[in-house]
Image (cartoon, rainbow, N blue to C red; front, side):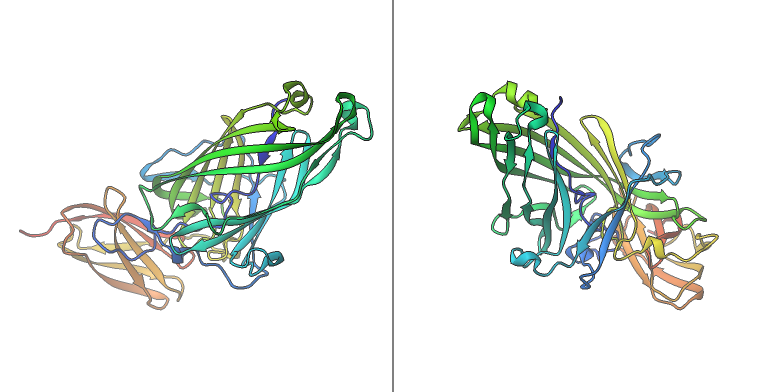
Length: 412
């Protein structure tokens, strides 16, 4: 049997209810598209959950990075897999992790045995997003089907880890279009093994997993997704983050390396290496990735989409036949200011985001006008150089309602 030992939570970069956001106030004209700590806030209602839905993998193409990309996944269909659930705003779960912001369940697979009802608690920090700690449920599993003896078993012990003194950060803020972040993790599961045939009676053992992970923001642009309520496809301004993970599993029994013959009988392999890579699209005001794909050992293992991020409820979108709005930008070329005219379809605030050709956001304008015809005056920063610029007009759900470009030509 091949190695099957992995912790498979809904990963934060799919696993976590993160929201990478283009909406930020810039400190300088050359500040990168960035995500701040405040972009990750969730509702204080403890009943809130974040759901992700499995999607069909056939025909899925892994995304390519780059500036101002267009990723069209509007043809992706949901699979029959039941949605997974992430509970937010956990104030004091089990009295162990009082600073946790959310909790999700995980499944741990030890050879042919699956351990359910494991929990991982996560929290926000001022300078990043981290794991707060985990509870590993453990359990006893009979080995009778392998050895023929009813008394033979493996017992995985319950464990509680609290990382508050040494948090494992997924991201450091601000997260920009060129951010890279690495971290290391060592996970230890203790067990007892009883196999009468080889003289083992509750022999102590350990599974030690050493992990190395790297997050890289590898692109920005527009993500097109199917509208779950039907009608026009949905476009989102997004960052694309790649998470590469390398893990090595080691097994010990009675103080020494576990025998290969015994491991092979359980479908395990000493010092086996696993390679996981996930691609996650994060959009403004969303509490988790809009779309995620995971590759395990060079095979596409999972594609998921968000169902109801806390801010930006995809399933609560109105039934609209056409999301796009017509905009008129003038003068173009612009001497440093221009007007944008369009029909605003709702009273909620909209945002105009302006980027240069390197993907740096160089302008943000909040449009708080009521619904109806809008004529918005935009004053560009005087430090901007001449050249081509792009814009996205986002509604309050972070949906792109219009996009375009203009030429900046300032008089000498």
